[in-house]
Amino acid sequence: MKKSIMITDQKILSKIYLIRGKKVMLDRDLADLYNVETRALNQAVKRNMSRFPLDFMFQLTNREMENWKSQFVISSKKKMGLRKLPLAFTEQGVAMLSGILNSEIAVDVNIQIIRIFIKMRKILVANKDILSKLDQLKRKFLNRTIG
Image (tube, rainbow, N blue to C red; front, side, top):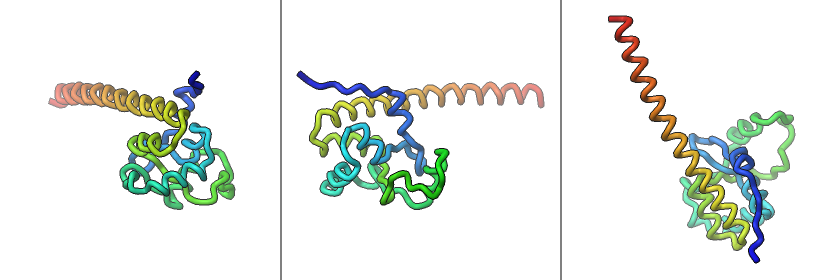
């Protein structure tokens, strides 16, 4: 019998950050979701670096780390349990992780994460269309009131 894991979409969404203009998830959050140690996740990545080009994964800079920490109400002196700068995984990097982590949990969680990224993209596209139409209406209104 397959063991199922229940993770809410909201929990996953709360772990997606915008860094370098990309939606990413951090190694520590992914390790938590996969129920593995961050160290084990990073070792698996290190053994498979050729699968993770820069558009799939990158390491945060000190400044990015400070910006990320500032999103939380935590003293800047705390490292939040971090000994090194975290790795950030894009949607493609997250998808690649399921291929290097040999666990059913990782595969199941990855499927859920990828589905959330897809939903986010659909929402973004829908909102882009709405914003474009609002901009057109605004221009028409301004042209009528000015002209």
